[in-house]
Image 1 (cartoon, rainbow, N blue to C red):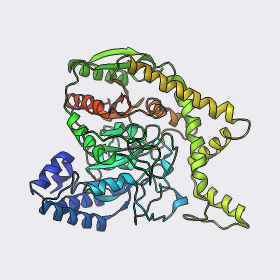
Image 2 (image 1 turned 60 degrees about the vertical axis):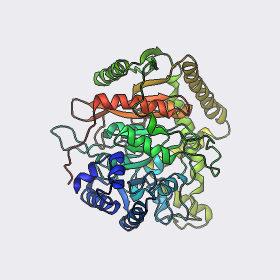
Image 3 (image 1 turned 90 degrees about the vertical axis):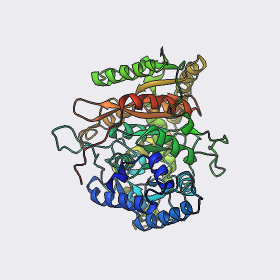
Image 4 (image 1 turned 180 degrees about the vertical axis):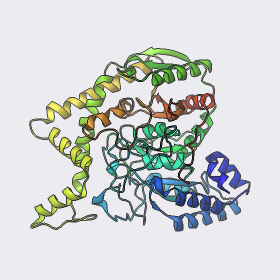
Length: 492
C-alpha cells in the first residue's frame, strides 16, 4: 500500500471515488510513512486520532455519493494556522501548548471540502526565516541530499515542514504561508510546486499574524494540477478578514493544460543579479525556451526599483512584526515567566519566549517605527513599495501576461552553512521572491531541474493580480517539459 503515498491529489481523488481504496487506507499509509520519517522533523504534531475520524467520515460520505472536492485527501497544516482543539504554537516557545478554540478560515475550507488532517508541520518561529532553522521545535531536515554526501540540507523556510512533508510523500498536499517567499522558496528547494496567491485571495483569519500587509496563505503540492485543486478550496471571500477580496473563485483546475500560445512573458533584466550561479542562469534561459516552444512570446522588461525591494521589505516586515507580536506578553495565553512586577513579567516572558531571530526583528521593527525614525525608514520604505508595485503595473499595462524569473539564487544549502555570523546572508535568499509580496501579486514556483549536486532548482512565474489561472497554465508547460522530481528515501 506504500504506493498510495506516491499518488497525486487528482489520482487519489479518482481512486477514492472509484472505490479502489478507502480514505481510511489512504490516511493509514501516510501515518505510517510519517512515523518512519520522524528524523526529518517535518511534523511538530501528528494527529492520528483526528485523521482516522475524518477519514472514516469521508468514507461514509463517499459511500452515500456525497463526496466533497477534497474528500478523503490527507493534508498537512503549517503550524501558523489555528486548528480548533489542536495545539498551535507558530513553533515558538512563547506559545507553548496554546490550543485554539477556533479554526482558521483556510483550514475550515479544506475540512468543509472533505480533506483529512494528518498533523501540524514545522516552520521557522513565527514564520521568520528562510531555512527552517529558527523553529523552537528544532530544524527540519530536507528529504534531499547532495550526491555522495550525508550533509543534512535545509528544506527552505519558513514553510519548511510543509515542503518536506509533501516532497517526502508524508502528505499529498499541505498549507503554507508566504510573507516574502516562504512558500515559493521551500517549494523550489524541495522539488515541488508552491503557490503564493494574490494578496486577499485567501483569508488570513485564524493564521498567526507576522506581517499583515504581506502574509498570504497558499498550497504546496507535487504537481501544478494538485496546487490548482487545493487553491480552489483554500481561496474565497471571508467577511472576518477585512483584506479578503470579494471575488468569485475561478475553476483553477480547468486552467491547467490550457494553451499558452500568444501569451507575452516578461523577462525582468534586473533579476540578473551579480554573482548569480551559471546553473541558475542556464535554468532560466531553458525555462524561457520551453515557454517559447509552447507558443509564448518572450519579452525583456524592466522593473527598475527591484534593487530597493529587499531593503524596503526588511523595514516593512519587522515593523509589522513588532506591532503584531506585542500581544504576546504572558498574560492571556502561552508562556509566562514570573517577575517582580508586571513589567518584569513582560520582560522575562518575552526574553525567554522569543528566539534570537524573532527578537532581532522586533528590535528592528520597533526602531524603524520609533519617533524620529518613522519618516526616515518606514514611510520611505512604503513609498518604495508603491514604486515596486507600479513597475509591475506598467509592464502588465504594456501587454505582459506574466513574468518568468528564478525562484531562488541557488539550490538548498546545508544546515548551519548560512546566516550564522551575518543574518543578511540568509535574507539574500529572498531576493527573487519579496517583490511579489511587496506588490501583492500571485507567484508560483515550479520544479525545473537539478543542479550539479543533484538538488532541485525551481523557476518562478509572477502573474497579474487575481490571475492565478495564467500561472497554472504556464506552470504546467514547465512541469510537462522538465518532469517531476523525487528524493531518495534515505530516512525510511
